[in-house]
Length: 136
Ligand code: IDP
Ligand code: MG
Image 1 (cartoon, helix red, strand yellow):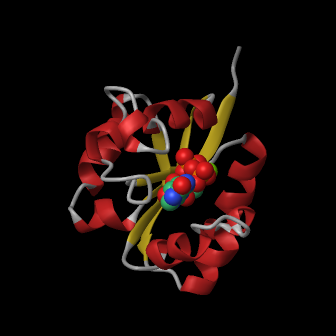
Image 2 (image 1 turned 120 degrees about the horizontal axis):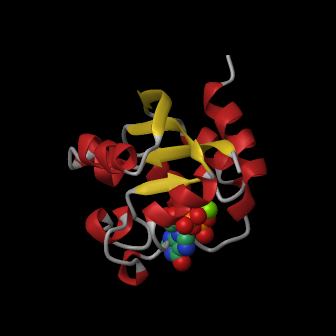
Image 3 (image 1 turned 180 degrees about the vertical axis):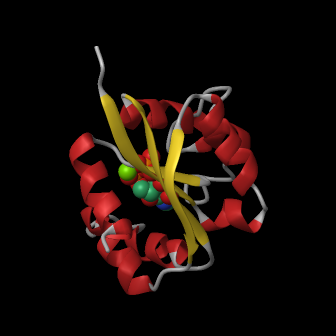
């Protein structure tokens, strides 16, 4: 069945800083994702706080928002059949230590906080996150 979806992906500051942007994009393309939109930006902490609002009550929230706003990031809209789940699979577990071979976080993640990529966790959140970064 055809189930074309779009999802939001972010290459986080730790990966941009290590010049992994192209390698990571190649991993997406190799799995059949189309990169429909992309931009390299640096966001304000206040924007990171909005983006990660679901984690507001978590002990790591403040560090997470400092981190996402600490340097350039690459924000992309990816498209593929079942893109949301497919991207989560390609990213691997939140903690790179738990991520499976062949995943982006296994290959490039440094630690649970510097785990190289973000990906939307549901179709509903993908729409919200795409709008967050690409609504004109
Ligand atoms: P996800 O990125 O795999 O969806 P979430 O649970 O949504 O993981 O957490 C968002 C981000 O917050 C993670 O990617 C990671 O950077 C950070 N994070 C999650 N759990 C922890 C933690 O226990 N300590 C520090 N940072 C964390
Ligand atoms: Mg998440």
